[in-house]
Amino acid sequence: MTDNQGMADRGIATAGVELQLGTHHFRFDCDLPQGRIIAITGPSGSGKSTFLNLLAGFESPDHGRIMLAGRDATRLPPSQRPVSLVFQDNNLFAHLDLFTNVGLGINPSLKLTADDRQRISGALARVGLAGFDRRKPGTLSGGERQRAAFARALVRDKPILLLDEPFAALDPGLRSGMAELLTALHRETGNTVLIVSHDPAEVRRLADHAVFIDGGTIRLSAPIEHFLKQDGIPALTTFLQH
Ligand SMILES: Nc1ncnc2c1ncn2[C@@H]1O[C@H](COP(=O)(O)OP(=O)(O)OP(=O)(O)O)[C@@H](O)[C@H]1O
Image (tube, rainbow, N blue to C red; front, side):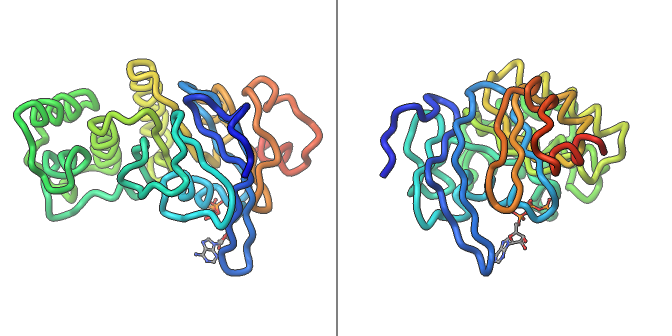
């Protein structure tokens, strides 16, 4: 096993992480900075979601080690990892109101203290959904549902936030509003944010650091200024010219 030196202190690091899914082989080695917004880019089918699934614990590596916020998380179940997640389809439960959906972020059995209840209302207010507590997801717009998913991630109060194309289903106006909300929340919490994005403009606008995945492996991981200037990876040049 690789030793611990050089692996991100409080950020995210993977060392010799390998996974086979059907005919696809993945290998991820990275050392990502703490407290930054990090874009995960790459062609369709390159392995971006698989990378996030490994970090979240929805996939287990065949080999290698995953460090999250200073802890070896390789064998931790998803619920014990220091991460919260927001996906494109926001995963809200249709039959539960927003207060309950957000409450699930704190405690899956919904045994909530008075303090928890205040945090839930506070998180809904923070994303612009004050007074929406009793609304069901089906009565909300796409943007409102996505903000509710952010509120649920916020109450979990974890040092790492994983976002898998969280704005993809939104129209361009809403998308830039959500990007602003994300940067504002990031400034407040100082957490490490990983965001999968297909949109070079979004990457330029949001990211401090970016990763390019191609063919199941990380081809480049660099601060954004360097990432945007590189010219040695044709597939990345193509991505940036979109
Ligand atoms: N459980 C699985 N079994 C077999 N193949 C899988 C499995 N999960 C993912 N794959 C394959 O692995 C490849 C990478 O998938 P992944 O979803 O990580 O790509 P992605 O970069 O997120 O793609 P996109 O940008 O299109 O969402 C794809 O070809 C996918 O079909």
